Structure formats: structure tokens, C-alpha cells
Image 1 (tube, rainbow, N blue to C red):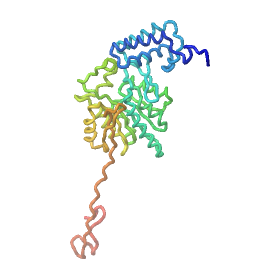
Image 2 (cartoon, helix red, strand yellow; image 1 turned 90 degrees about the horizontal axis):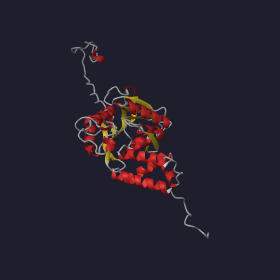
Image 3 (spheres, one colour; image 1 turned 180 degrees about the vertical axis):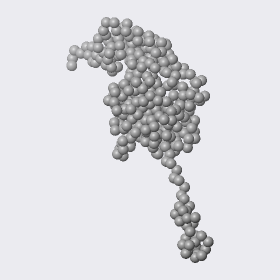
Length: 338
């Protein structure tokens, strides 16, 4: 077509909005934020009340937007987690509610959820209705993912934090999984989920595992994630993970799958601890989405068969021998004869 002008083509973002986002990205970069441009864009979309992709063709910038956006950017510049500012985060196919005081689901944990989902789906394909337990569930990302991706699975989630339990319940309801069982409990409690002992097909957990002397560097984690969800107890941070192993040994069916996240430097220790229980076989390590060794996998061992009883000795008797009566054998069932 003749007479085309330089304005032809897809509409471009409002130049004022673009300048605000670029300025915000510079501020966040100077503050040490790991993904300044992405965070600035997310905050702009949040301030406008639109999805991030809608900024390609953004709505008109309303009055007061610049001030609202600047306030949000300042919170992020001070290293408040982006997820706390927006109140949500993505996890697999879900948009999860998040809030201060509850551990924010991480992208790296999505692979842990994937292993649990795959196992549950495999069991469904075999005609079973698997029982899946998520210990130390936090906001409920893994539990809700399994419940929504494998709808016939029976899923239970447990956390020691009342705030985490309430948030998991909220996320389950928001994603159409009201039947998901959510309980307050300590993984170290030997009576936890007693009704499921020996009945669980998949036990998955992202427990706290940071040692006490390994304080996180990032302010978003150090200053905002709850200590209860970070530090695993003991000098090596593995007290809670070991409690997860004990719970898995008690709850899993023979052949049931354990999947547990850990730090990449804890892979050997996690395998060693699992093997030391004597309750697991096929103990190994799988990588997370970044390729780092971040999850323990193992199967509940089948109980050892009791040793076969030795064959009963047969004794030939003769009439008149001691202990006989008319030549009848002295051996009787139960040894009831004197």
C-alpha cells in the first residue's frame, strides 16, 4: 500500500510508561536486585492492574500511576521480595497466593513437584488412586500442583506454621482443590498422620535444611523468609530432613516413593542418612531445573521375608521304646503329650 507512514505497524508502549520502567530498572539494578528489568515490568503491570503481557499494548497510564509505581519500586529497592509486594507468584501452572511469614515457593522446587506428579500419574494409569503427602508444605505449591494435575490423587499437606497451613488452604480452595487435606503438625511427631501409616504412595517434601551458620546473603531470604522454613536444625541443618526420612519410613507403602529437596552440598549426606535408616532402596539424587543435585529420591523397602522354618525332624519309634504306647509315635502337634 502506498502512502505508508512511519506510524504504521504494531502500537508501541506508552513512552512515558517505558521511561518509568527503564528508570525503575536502573534503580533496582543499583540496589543489587538480581532481575531489575523483569521486576520493574512486573511492578508496572501490578500497579496498572493488568497482566505483564498486556504491557505490549498497555492501557492509558491513569492519574496517580507514577506515584503508586514509585512507591512499589522503592519497596523493591529496599529488597522486599517481589512476591510479597504483588501478593502472588507463579509455580508450575499455578498462580499462588503468598504473604509475609510464609516461605515463598521457588522455581527450583518445580522439578521436585514434577517427580511427585509423574509418580502419582503413573499409579493412576495403573488404575490406582494414589495417596500423596507433602510435608513442610509452606504455601502449598507442591500439594496443590499434585492435587490439580492428578485430580484422582488423595493429597495431604502438613506444616508446623499456622500461617502456612492457612495459606495452603487458601491456595487449594482458589485452585479448585477443596478436598486437599491440610493439617498443622510437626514432622518430628511420631503420631503425625497416624491414619496414613503404611498407606502413602508418594511422600514429597521441601523441608528447611539450612545450617545455623549458613545465613543467606540475599536480603529477600535472610530478612523476609521465616526462620522456621529456612533452618533445618542441628549443626548440619539436617535435623528436620532426617525427621522427614523417619516419617517416610513410617508412612510409605512398600515400594512407595520419597522425594525430598536439599541443598546441593547436602546430596551425599542425604543419601547416607536415607541408607542408614535401612528403610529405603534405590536411593539416589536428581537435579533441579538448573541441573544442580538438589533432591533425594528413594523407595520404601519391602519388608524382609521371615526366615523359613527348618523342616521338622522325623523320628522312627519302635514298639516298647521309651515314651511310646503300643508303638504309637511320641511326636504330637504342639508337644501336648508329656
